[in-house]
Length: 261
Figure 1 (spheres, rainbow, N blue to C red):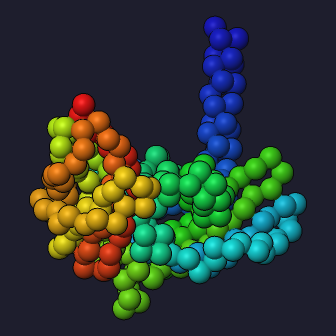
Figure 2: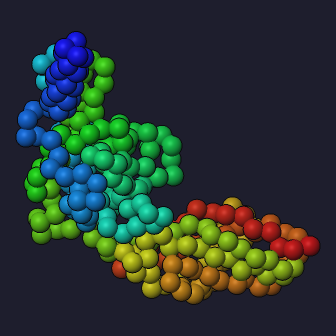
Figure 3: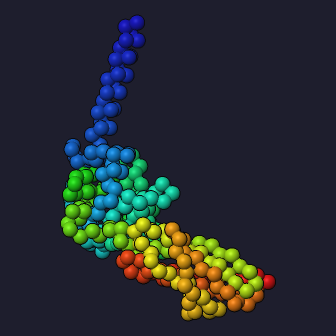
């Protein structure tokens, strides 16, 4: 029995030491996030953060890095789509964000894989942890094998200007089409309808990749729709959408549609 009790004591002491070591990891005391999960999400909703600097820390030595995206502003919008929140960079919808424990996860969606990769590295979201968060300061830490990169953000939420204001240029994309022998009905989706407040839209079409003939479209909720008539059967047409909202006009990429045979 004495041997069993001694073994139990050793296990308890070892467990306490393990828990103590684990709780001290991840930065200086008091600098960790004050909240996780839903509470952290609520703190970030509709806040705006300007990247102030990026610092590399290796073997106790700090080096300020030449980050080309310093002074750019990130907005953690409260608007959602498919359970993810809209992420804005300098007023432009550029991806999605969500909370994973004490990490701010994001998926950049700019339409350009190279740009997505550059943003993932430059802004410190994705695999990084929160080193510090107050009403005025946010520090993200990306840990590597031999060094860590610190991304320092300052809040611009109460500065009088609203870099993430819902008044955004329309974010639109080709959604669907139906065709007969002599007509096509094309539909585009507004991905930020509440922010864009689209008031006017037009569909351009033609048989070349730069269509110039215009057709007025109707805007209903998050959809833009127009029916184009007088077309030739079995013919490929190119279409694009131009939408005007509270903060300007956006023209979509060109898409191809085909009339029925």
